Amino acid sequence: MSQATARVSGALVAAAALAASLLLWAAPAGAEELSGGRLGWGVKESFRSYITGPIAQGEVQTGDGASTADGSYRFHSATGSYEDGTAVIDYQGWVYFWGHGGELDVTFANPSVEYSGDSGTLYVYVNGTRTDMASLSGASLSASGRTVSVSGASATLTSSGAEAFAGYYEAGQALDPVSFSADVVAAEPEETREASEPEPTGAGGDGAVSGAILDWGVRASWREYVSGGIADGGWTAAEGAADGGAVFRFTEGAGTAAAGDYTLAYEGTVRFTGTDVDLALTDPAVAAEDGAGVLSAEVGGTRVDLVTFEAELVEAGGVLLAEAVPTALTEAAAPVFGGFYQAGDPMDPLTIAVPLTAGAELPALPDLGSEPQEPSSSAAAEEVDAVEAAESDANPLAWVVPAALALVLGVAAAVVALTRRAERRKQTGGAGAPAAGPVPEPGSAEDTPEENGEGAHGAGPAGPPDGGPEADKEQQHP
Ligand code: HEM
Image 1: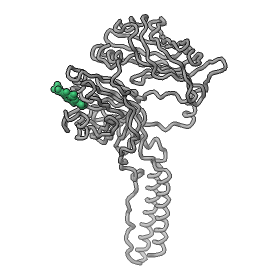
Image 2 (image 1 turned 180 degrees about the horizontal axis):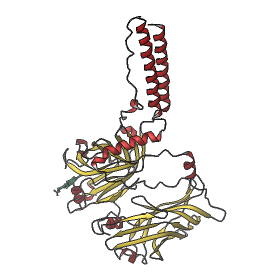
Image 3 (image 1 turned 180 degrees about the vertical axis):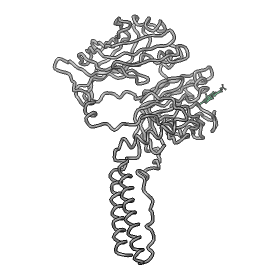
Image 4 (image 1 turned 60 degrees about the vertical axis):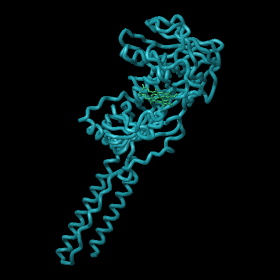
């Protein structure tokens, strides 16, 4: 090798090393983090009818934030990743089937999906054991804006899933379709993160507090009635209220709070609309004396006592808390729900949390993520590309590196060509063209999604309480 060629080769190696180190330093993380979103799955319509019908004479309950919506069960608070067209997402919540006087006793909890292109797998914890339940197919994974979703994938039972049904279904049996979505976590600028920290609050000497929250789902069967076939409607949460699926959160609670004596006024409106239904519950308040409490809200311009409850606030971790407190309808509120419920009927439990310090952690609200949009099939590929592009947006250096590498290699190749031409002119013999090595693509080392084994999904989920179903079960009619 001539000195000139050696020099050029040395320069090339140095350039490649520089480019490689740039890549190592600035390559995008590869995987997009997903947080917030929902998974809807009705298990199997005939199974649901069988459970509550005359044969099994059973019940279905949902818990840990899962709810019934659009005729299926809705799981929530997605966490996961999206990388190179593959989504791996875990959801929270459980649905509990009970029948035949307790012979049938099965909980499906914390489903997760692994999905690429137009197929994937649905996993579910069956009575605490993670089980691959169904093969999914027939719907494309779309990435629309900052949301990854699949709408209406067909689900067929696997052989391990069949065991959950005591052999009454065989592998290959069609189950209800599965839809899911999850939001891509946006890289938040430092200042925004700081700004979104909860404002300092706390009980002064006079017991004055602020920043409290109230979680209340009104009543599961009411939500089902409004969103089901009869009323065919829905609800919106606004002006300080948020929708957690099975629970609504009212915020900005201010007042005084100490153990069994507290008065808190919250902000927010939840409005239920549908056929013959238009009910807005606005700015709820709780007031308790010696633990005997009343929850009221503005209904059509008048404050109405809705439910009564018994709860003392107990301090834990800088939060005054009363969690999942049973409630009963007042007589005054019976007409609010069209007379479907009587005074004393159980309504949904409520949770009150009052932060006493700035960093105090309030109970998490189930995070349903953005409202998933129905993707049109032709747009799906485009949308996925949009997310890939967004990945580059998220890391401004992502495009700089390949560009820098191309430039370095281009200049080096030109130098080599010129040197070789000069050498050839000198007739010093035929050194071959430098091998055009493969140009590494950013993130290519991370293209294969990690095997997501059981261990990665942590301990088994929380399940329903022991001792069979509770009296306040999910119903089809209010
Ligand atoms: C005392 C014990 C049980 C009895 C007497 C019983 C009885 C029955 C009967 C008679 C049917 C047929 C219903 C029909 O054709 O309409 C049925 C269906 C079924 N049973 Fe059970 N069963 C029992 C326990 C269980 C258990 C432990 C499971 C586990 C989840 C289970 C899951 C199913 C399923 C998945 C079906 C099919 C429902 C459908 O899609 O139509 N059963 N059972």
